[in-house]
Length: 425
Image 1 (cartoon, one colour):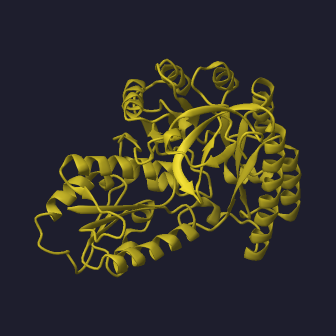
Image 2: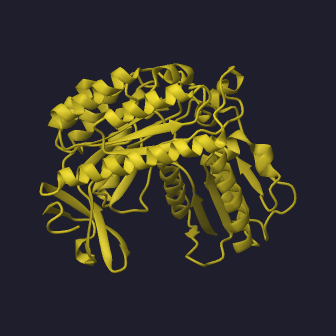
Image 3: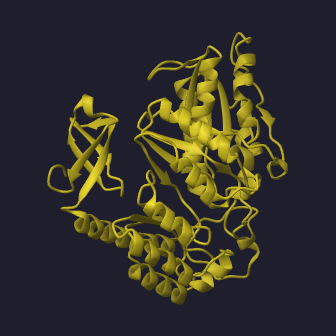
């Protein structure tokens, strides 16, 4: 069978799609080539916002038009949260929840016995994800340079605006030994950079009794020339001890991604976040103390219920004061089954949400420009990637400064020491 995977959303989704693709290849199936008609189309969806749901629906319609005779399988967060809605989209054959996603290889084997696409009413297979204890490890191999390594899944935090615990289930993880084994397999496959991925990776160890920091130390003992990035980690779980370890490690990049969500303590309480802005500022200050050149990315949400004009101004002033490198800005959208909808709070109009988002995007651009200017003239080690655009290739330094040069196939997936801003731009 020729199978096409299309993935939306987070790095976790991409890691899982890649792992499922490898399993299908091992069973004798093939990936459909670009522009080639597929026998089975798998769409791994996202549902973090209403806009994500809209993009999912658009993609489903487009894939069906492009592959009129294929069996169309929809899985991922949108399928888990709204299976009935997905099943009613014209052309969908199977709707698989988050746990059922990992049975896709068996489903494709069964489909191979059918002479044509299923047609008719969609088959819906979902389960109560909060009752699932199984952890399905995954790592992406589609990009030989960078590998997304899944170490954890699910979340126990239940922030008032978020549906991820309902879509991904409770916090659970692989063992340290299993993660190390998968990391070594990815490195043998040619990866030069591992990105530790999950829903709440700092909560690693919830199901095995181990610690996140112990995992980092075990991964740092692996021999070879490669580096590791830590993806988003909650500020209350990113301890000074972890930051100090990264600063002294062999393989870990000076790169942190920390969700702030709001710079107003009042709004953080409404969100049911587990830290204050003072703790967040302490984390940033400690990173700057031990890793002054580190890249610090920050997640920011705007327009949640209860974000009054006073809270917004307080939030904005706090964000401006932070010595961080870039903001990742998200506009709040109401999500069914979240507690925030039950709270008697002021609703921020859509136009004002958009305006606040634009303000933070501008702040982000200013901070990124300042960070790049500060790094200009410093030495860095770039890992060149395979993608090319207009005859040029690009790569990132250890502290996530992006540079480019004329394309040279021999440099793909290799490290090169450079002077930032002088040899390449």
